[in-house]
Amino acid sequence: MTDFYNAFLVAKVLKLAPDHVTVFIVDGHPAGALDDTWSRLFGGMIRAGEITEAVTIQRMVWSTIGYDSMLNSHHLHQVPFLEEFRSFFLSRHSLHFNDALDCDNLTVVLLLRKDYLAHPRNPSGSVSRKIANDKELVQSLKEFLPQHNVISSQIDLFSMKDQLSLISRTDILIGMHGAGLTHTLFLPKHAGLIELYPNYWPTANVHFQAMARWRNLKYLQWQNTDPSNEHANEYTVINKSALLGMVKNMHSSICS
Image (cartoon, rainbow, N blue to C red; front, side, top):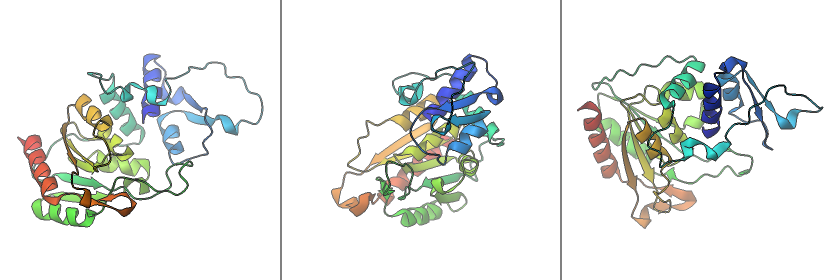
């Protein structure tokens, strides 16, 4: 997401039409699941590793690289053009969002982290910070919010457009600290984020708290303090009562 934002920001500052921008990716990674997103956002993409003969590029801009992005400067009071970036990202996926709030019909989404092959340098596909009792949590949330829409989703299984379609109509997003929470950037303007941490992961990692702050979203966090709730293969049992309490507070905060 930092790379997407960096490229957007360069094009914005230099007044380049996205359809006239070709993204040149200089790294050693093979083609991946996000290549289609680059092509949707801009006029196309080229990987350096796919070039087999000498080429001349007439006009090139060297963008800010990866985590040097302002999105990774969590101390900043504000980040430029963030709402415009959200609009750009959604519209380039042909999504027309509606920020209207209906407190009688909220959508609550629990993001699930499961083992999956997300990166060529992690061939085992093993990920940390997984929820052990997600089914129990979803059932409790449905009983707690019987008139509302409660969904659990392993969002990486969907196309980017389908991910954005879900997130852009989510009022309360709940999930373990992890890359999926970058979708905080695309939540409705009234929404809230509840971020969960296992006891082995430092809450000083404030990437998504910063994103929520920059967008003036509601934010709550929880960290496990009971070692017995940490299970094998980096699964964590989430305290059901604590989560329901935070959802109740978030509901009140959004709808007050």
